Length: 117
Length: 114
Image 1 (cartoon, each protein chain N blue to C red):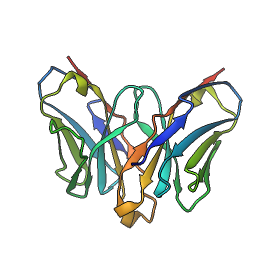
Image 2: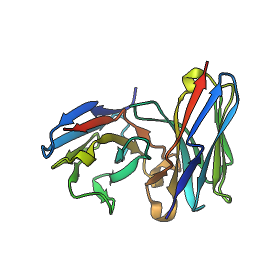
Image 3: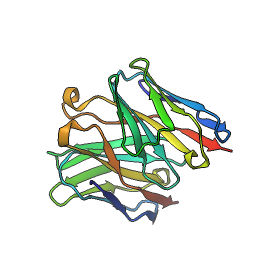
């Protein structure tokens, strides 16, 4: 089945210790997104890739970086995690508006729950 | 700035009841609206996508409507079951400049009691 996969599902890190979360997709979608979701809050977009073009949200902290080496994979790097970065991190994919004819539904992975000690 | 509101924040109903979840948005210039389901500690599952030119979409026991001019969408769930218990989120996609971004509401937490 075509899907969005996130690894690991649960990640524990120490304050200030860099961590990388990964996302892969078999949908062959050209747009990939990273969201941060804290408890009882709406998902907050951190950045997205339109093919290889990186689009950062204005309020995304510099502590968050991303890499997309190819269509299938996308990584979220947190350079120095703080206690406030503990959250669920969600990866999503879609086709872009231009090529999808409006059918650019976003499909989400299961998420990675990050704990910062 | 687009804002999405979902009321109520939580809803508890007995099994078998028909129910409606509400979503409102402040800027009617949307490309489409998507309803999601989220189980505790899990990712989001897409339920329905409504284009701005459409009035409703149906999938099984779910029916979503869209009134773009009034900035409202509803998700109707027929004959609710305990397995429907989850948080339901709506999200709108802006239409300016081909933006790919979704703006989410905080969700309605639904509990269906056996």
